[in-house]
Length: 281
Image (tube, rainbow, N blue to C red):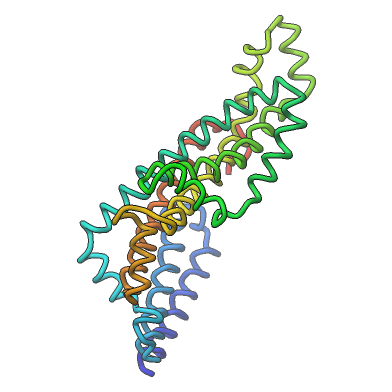
């Protein structure tokens, strides 16, 4: 029980420090904003380690963070190959194709009321289809390599990105559009100089949502067939072998990659939409 008591004491101390930092005058400083979540995450890991070791939880149910870290450090070559297969080839490729296609189709829909009334309801229906139903079909169509995973990602990110872009293109108000007409601006000039800039907060919202959908789609698609590499393949095989430490190591890689991907898009958004009120905080 000493592990559990020690972990709880550390958790209480970390909680007190975090509460003090969050309520202090330095809470708005960048180092404090980084320190608070970092300290909270460290406290969660210490509590996890203490509870698992103190209660002697079997490793096949929940391994301690120290065992996961050791397996992570000892399996870097395998984890790197899986990362390239799943994230770089499957998730990132499908993300770029799906988001680019969604933006192009959104412009077509914006020009055609028929497509706006006909395609968007169909898109909402397709977006509601479960991935476990569409992934096996796409794997059979495109093969067992990364191309089928990219196709699953395209399906997952296309319609959320489409809906956000269509809403963004309608964000500019009538007075702004009337002003562009008084300048004798055509549709494409109005699109590039007014409507697309006004739509950027919506577009980046779709891009950020799609970062998590892309990685989830690529990993789940590998459960239905893949070469002998990839995060989803490794997770499914290691679960069958009761290698939960390797499963958690793959989950760690996915969490780091997903968080970094989201952060990169958020940084680009901050630079592109610096004029928006949401970026002035």
